Image 1 (cartoon, rainbow, N blue to C red):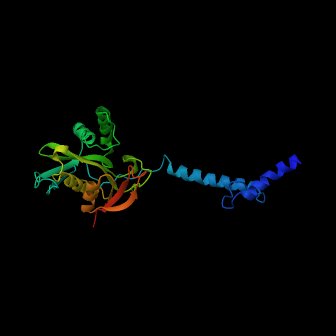
Image 2: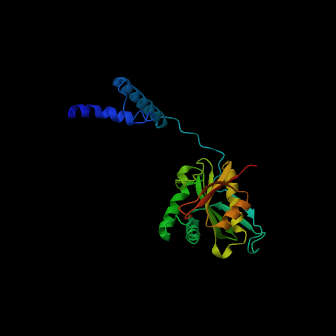
Image 3: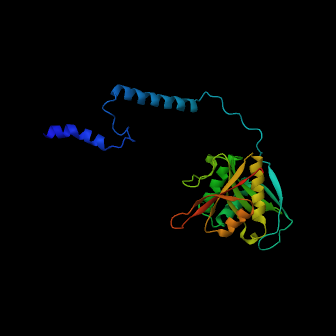
Length: 255
């Protein structure tokens, strides 16, 4: 009797398995050889596609000749700020950061209060120095006013040059903006918007159709700044009980 129960047990389990999951237990009516052949053919097809993708003898993609070089810069006239007009009419020179700019960019990022960076300055400087070679597909831009670096912003154009996102991920083939910050003593004077304009000019030089960015929900003034400058909400992540919630925003670069 025990042997009969054990023999019937798998059939009982088959009856309980949903037909929407036929791969959980193979059907008794299907010849095992055919099922094995199907699995083998699928695996072979998958390996063939991988072999094509990883073919070491394939011709490399030709380098794009329409990309900005390391000498790229944009001169942006600063408008009226939200708190004062000390810089109104000044010209902010926006360009890609260099090795000489690493200490200034590190100081700006550490003083911004934003998370996601090494808190030890030397570690951050090593990280930034290693990122210089990613230009133009990923870089930090600096804003220079009268010879002083007063602002910075990160721009990325593929998945390899940006953080990995588990929610609200922007398109990997579009421009992504992050870490926009201005020297604390110069905030409220229009430099942030001027820096944003410079980053958008770089995105157009990279032939990106859209600029994407994230904004923390706990920073309503920053959300309003981007909204006032043409960015619309593409997605909302409320976070956990309102903690670390954020918006995903975007703006078309060619209109």
